[in-house]
Amino acid sequence: MKASRIAAAGAVSGIAVLALSAPAFAHVSVQPEGTAAKGGYAVVDFKVPNERDNASTTKLEVSFPTDHPLASVMPQPVPGWKADVTKSKPAKPVESHGKQLTEVVTKVTWTADGKGIEPGYFQKFPVSVGALPEDADELVFKAIQTYDNKEVVRWIEVPQEGQEEPENPAPVLELAAAEGDAHGSSGAKAGGDTEAAAQNTAADTAASSDSDSGSGDGSDTTARVLGVVGIVVGAAGVAYGVLAGRRRDSGAAA
Image 1: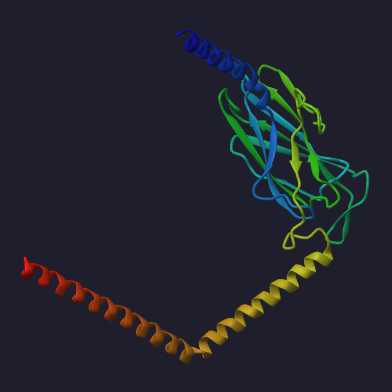
Image 2 (image 1 turned 180 degrees about the horizontal axis):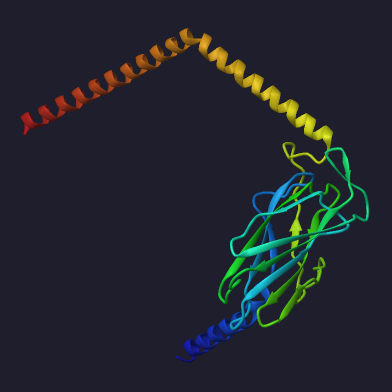
């Protein structure tokens, strides 16, 4: 009896600890839809949970990295929210499709038109970004979350490897290894992709032509398959006849 009471008390204590620590995990985060490969393009989702019981999130500000500026940043429309894009002059030159950009997106601000993110809910804010840097393993996006009671939470602390997660961690996007078929960040890569696509199209066309001209081979293959099926069916019939004969013999003997 005492053992069961101790176990029950331990379980209750564990649940209490989890309940108290749960809010620490409910922070603004960023995840790709699929893969965010170096040198390519991706759609990433900024996930914003509501951590309050008596207030709604009505504003989100996401700052984009200035050490690795992105040439293309396009937010997807989110019903009930207005997106404002802020551009600034990059600290270092940024090229896109052979042209040097004089401005890049440094911040996107979403403002709720209605109730916003109510208690007990979360919202995703998708953004198309690229070309992702080839000389970085991750990108840090600092975010500011504002509630309708004027409370502001700053998710701007950069997590450090080997250390505990900070109280208000900034969203971090992990970058995967470069993919050969990624939408290239340079004209040469894009040209290579175009050439490869043309070669694939030519190969598909040739294969289709061979298939049409080789209808005789297809007929031979069909005949062979039908022959094999006939053999299998015949063998099955013989086996059935043998079994039936054995059953009749057994009945006569009885």
